[in-house]
Image 1 (cartoon, one colour):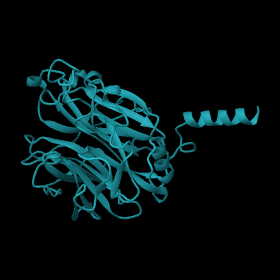
Image 2 (cartoon, rainbow, N blue to C red):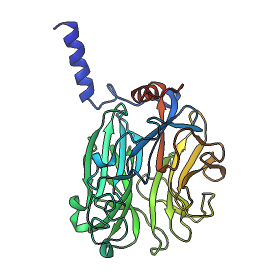
Image 3 (cartoon, rainbow, N blue to C red):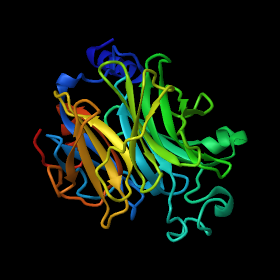
Image 4 (cartoon, rainbow, N blue to C red):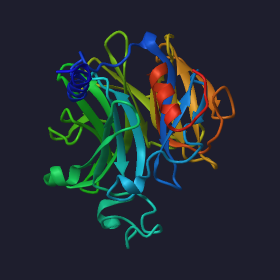
Length: 351
């Protein structure tokens, strides 16, 4: 076998493999930038922005979608994108399959996909799950919880997020669901390795003390001491961000009554991300109740005391070429990954 054929064969084998020998994510010391994914209400599509310092973010496509929601979702729109990195080095992107303006845009003849009197506001059937090793080429699957588990009588399935469960050796998808037209609660299930379907039935991940209060938008962060912090939204007055802590990734979260955001008005969609090389974490959230809507930020080193960082372009956090992002998530990326993504979209930026 000649050298060129051998190289091609080895490359093909490495692409197929999911073991750490061929693909594993860079360590934190190799990280050099931050990637933000978000969506906007007018487009219901996916956007990406990069930051070399975690303070100033630049949209990679000059404020235009990188993937149109009408090309990947059964409702022709996506919301609530979340991205994480798996132990195989791949990026896992999960989104709500929902277009709240689907009737106006001509995608359906009714306000909602199903009867709103029965299933409520924003009813839908599931998620869009995507996987990539380079942030450019993606596989895509529609995961309709309502079809996989019809006995649950799913009215809505929103805000999917993914985290690796080391004990199970699987990616865990956790999300908000409303069953039988009731209150929204937070659930979890496991996915297959290809990120194409759920392989376990959804179970409750956290029960709020007052069952009449709707809770949603969970975000789970592993701590250095082995514990897990869940930030989430409780609609017990103006909707705000609260926190629960557990020794286990999928159960045992202990309720804490304090609200940890800094907003007098309602906010949602918390996402916590770590600053590279520092023992500091940023809490980001979507202030949907202000006009124009914006992201808010706080910073902590102990998950007890939080420092307000303000809003995008009203404090330390900045955007350069986009505004009014909604429900986003941030991860660390390496210099090579950031440069490759920037080059693909012809973005001139230094890392």
